[in-house]
Amino acid sequence: MVQPESLTSETEDADELISVFGTDVLHFLVQQPMAGDRLDKVLAKLIPEHSRARIQGWIEAGHVQVNGQANNRVRQIVAAGDEISVKVQSSEQALALEPDDVAFEVVRESPEWLVVNKQAGLVVHPGAGNWQGTLLNGLLFRYPSLSHVARAGIVHRLDKDTTGLMVVAKSETAQTHLVRQLQQRTVKRHYRALVHGWLKDAQMTVDRAIGRDPKVPVRMSVSGPGPGKPAITHVSRLRTGTLAGQPVTEIKCQLETGRTHQIRVHLASVKHPLVGDTLYGGKVLVGAVRQMLHAESLSFVDPVSEQWVSLTSELPGDMQSVLNQVQWTDAGAC
Image (cartoon, rainbow, N blue to C red; front, side, top):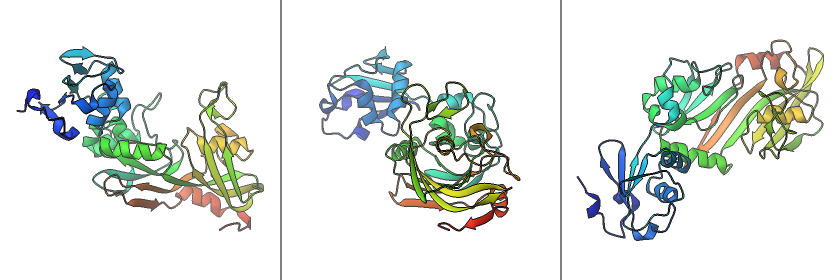
């Protein structure tokens, strides 16, 4: 067993400063290059496979010791020679939630990630009213190792009644990598949708901040109190027609950001709500009993190979059936 006292070289890499006592406690000896920096920043450099936010949570919960003393001050400055012990914690979600045999389709996977083609009606993450039977529960059942990854590896979500592609990380390292790609807006996500009305312009961009609707808690809004969060959706008109005697347009959307209900809110804000999306003013027409929205394509950089991964998904049967009933009058970009 390597004792902390033997870790004295100031030229050692971060990985070489780690010795494991048991299975879930990491010990570090702070070297001069990291002296004078904040505790959370130092640990983020020493254990980059864990996100900084998660490390901060461990510090605040008392799972980090400095020189044998429990510490819950994220901003504490560390000095050369300080001994830091970290008791690695499983995510709260993994501890609180149970695996459940939930059906879902995996379209591709690697040792570091998998891509799910989510069906309509499947909730992604447990929450009020949906504590079981979610995609997260199904992931824990099919991939037990995900119990050691925050949110069972989920890095982005789709609404319950939105279908299509989602990437899930199999390790914290991959999860951190993918989250950073989302934050840097390098993940490419394209959606197909059917909206009410005829879009006048072939191309448009909706750049409106989104926040919680102050009147309806389950809704989001572009006009709520406060500044909201920046949100940008690019929209391309594909073709126009009529459905049950009402004008409709098939569109393709590309997200730059990933806010809750973003496409639904943005399209409703420009008077083109999604067909079937009754929460935001859409109407149920000839079988469109949910919002007609499908995550059709997804591209991201593999966290290990650094190569692009690009996938597409066919429209689900119910949405294709609705489109088949449209009387198309303008082929648009199709």
